[in-house]
Length: 291
Image 1: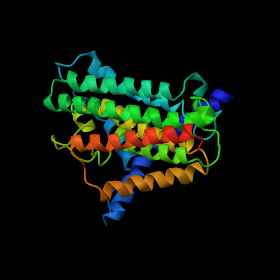
Image 2: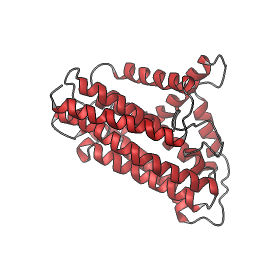
Image 3: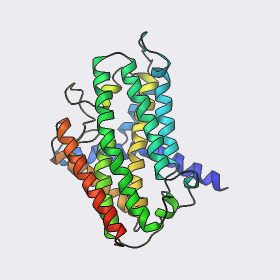
Image 4: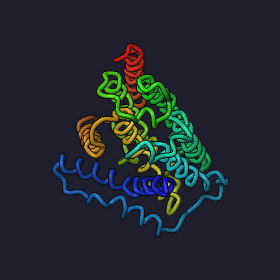
């Protein structure tokens, strides 16, 4: 029965992932004194895309058609390794946090190739920017979880997520991983999901050539990746306290940042991730010192 419970948890998180994006958007609209769409709007958008016909350029190869499925599969596979509600309700014995980074890198690799495969100027620009940002974000994510891994004596997420009490290193690591989460989920100040301006697009530039079911799969994968990083902070880096409460705090914090901070230029985003890198090193040092 254990695999059945694990699959149930994965399906539940996948089903809830668009709702998280809808809640963030709703909070942002309320802060801006706008009515906006409801929290279930991402579900309507996905349903609309699944019902639309796809338009695929004749110049694309099999990579363009296969990329949405690889991106979605990698996101779901990485999510299955995260012990959200309990350490036993995950496949974390099949891989640690390093496996999650490599699995997500596979999806990033394919979406970057798909952006180049279409041959558009926007796609190539977005792909280069995505890989540029990832070279700074991935080391910070690795160091952040390595800091809490030192406390647990293991890189296995089931062992890391076991409550060990409040530690200063975990708080510092949570801050650095939160900055990485903003970059990985294409949110302000690193990226902006709500714009299609060629000078600011990163993620959106790579998927401009997609439509219909393929675009729906990519959007769903983005929602899953977002809830994955939120869950890493709430369940692994900060394993104490109520999970729902921690997720609520993360969602509200992301919403407040998006309405109060302007989008940075690309090279200023590097400064932000470099700052996160310094914080993650501090977390490792503090963790090695036993705090």
